[in-house]
Image (cartoon, rainbow, N blue to C red):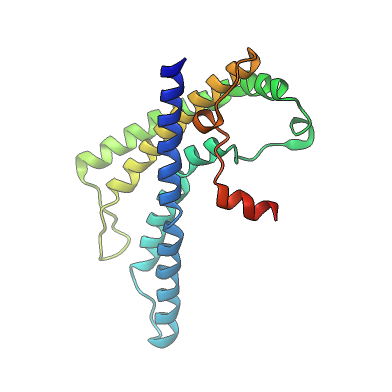
Length: 188
């Protein structure tokens, strides 16, 4: 059980650190878009590369947060019924529907690997602008993010099985992960 908890803690902490780090990408997006707007009004011409740079940064930001959201249990749920379930009923429901999650991730990982390996082999760049930035790193991040989400999904499934079996779940390892500052602000 100690090895399982250590694995879960490593996966959850990795996703938490990456998710928190990725949250700063919003600041990069803000600076890029604000600069573009300022240049558009001051010089009457936008920055030619800012739209593509924003797409790349936002794409990485959007995909890499999946594991972090799952660790926090912040993905969207239909709480009409689920919100009133006991912990064991929630665990049973999550286990019963987990095949959809793993099916989706199987397809995503397969396609992301194919896309990333092709992109890396060609050192793919974008031809949308004269800047021609490398896009193989952002395409590779799709595979990395999907893999991190898969690992967090496995941790979640293990936690659900433990709940169903009546075994106490260490939330610092299995989730739901909570950021103390964030949660205190929400409860105020």
